[in-house]
Image (cartoon, helix red, strand yellow):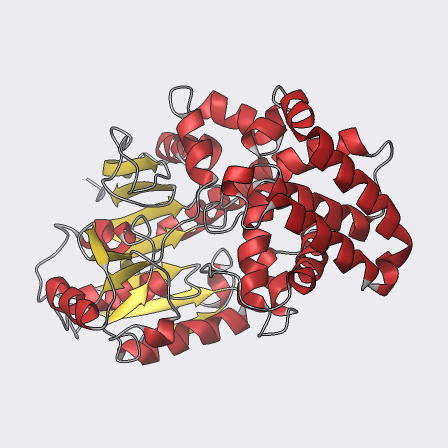
Length: 446
């Protein structure tokens, strides 16, 4: 989900839609799904405001607890928290706080199910405007309010990254830029970058094949996208295909590769861009609809793969019995490393999800490892910063598989904003999400 500036649609109408989307997120619906219900004319502005509200929701909920003796019903509470999230910090508010308050009350008056709550919302928000400094100061000691993440999440990061947990949280609360992967099998990165300059688009190189746009645009407006010369993909995610194939085999060797859990197909496409035409890639995903996305993405870049809708862990249902030279396992995870792009994730996840997902990851590793040829590779990765889904998982796998050798890998990448002056040490250069990478080689039997 890329972010856009609010449109000229009346602000009360946007706040109305933001509150409805926020109420859905609180019920466990992803932000992507919630936004799909928003009319297209409203969606850009609503998405921008929703994302900002989600990034400030911890503070907003702490403020609301001071303003209301009881938690309101879901929709009025969502509207109240939306207004508080957007208005509490005047220096970063998208609109002047008084305007936000006035328009939030107007949204209540024009929403049938909220009309009876309009006076209550007005009273709470007017008090907030009068006593803002004191109310904000009273929430400064609350961990969830201070960091705008659930308290369990903050404690987990303190445990897993004692030297960097604050950097991770700060990065999570910034908007991620639009990052592109250049299809260097068809065009030199600098040539595409210059073409963008000629169309008024400014960008900065990141990683081996990436370009970070200074401002997000619709993909339809990006020169080279329709022709398959570039694809949207974060710089950390671009490392997957590069790590798996680096120094692995002669450039002309025909390789048989599996991309497990492949949807929506960004890594599959990248593999095909780096491989020769003799190599064969199988892209697997459990969701048939998401498999269609894989096919669409491959069609755009002009490459082909064998796309299968199946559960990667149930190998008997889809595997033909021939081992793979290499497997890319981008395993299901908490998505704790891509919170910059999906600020709803922090509020959707629960602490218990980590152990549950770690069990799924462990099973996938165990089921797919026999499918790797002796001398072949398996790259395990997650878009998570939690150790249970990264380093701990890799250590356990090596301990229980004596024929697995852990090759030099990136390990845990922490999210960082490339525009900040204090880039984190022992991390990738530039702007990127949080990720984990572990590359295993299968030791041939003696």
